[in-house]
Length: 196
Image (spheres, rainbow, N blue to C red):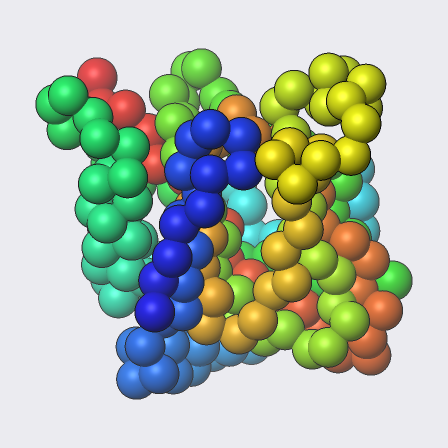
């Protein structure tokens, strides 16, 4: 069952993919990794390898994934209660592989040239203790001055699981903890942009 929560007065949407859809997607992702791993690189300030911004010929392309992203986003739009539904499209998606001791540093997906407005992740292979997703409160300075309260979250910690998706505004800073397991943590990240 999909759910929504409002940790910072805007919706963050999450839930599981159905088993049959997930099984097909996971098979495609693992096949893609096996055929293209040599093209993966480290585009950020961490050791996590990714297909992010690799050459078009070797990038991950998947019709099923695009349908999943559009469905997730369509549902997510309902929680924003937009006055008019914005004209949006998928800006891009990529596969991430974190081995033991690897992590993803604090970052956001905001890109004014690409016009990213929403971003998300789908978890493909998630061993136990392979690193939580931490969504940082955009009121970080103020939040650390506020005494602990059940009404105010400093950060939100999401323990990933296979099949789980999560979508949030692209400007929301987040990070992924260290993979302490001996297996690869595999995820798909994506961005949704405003069409011009």
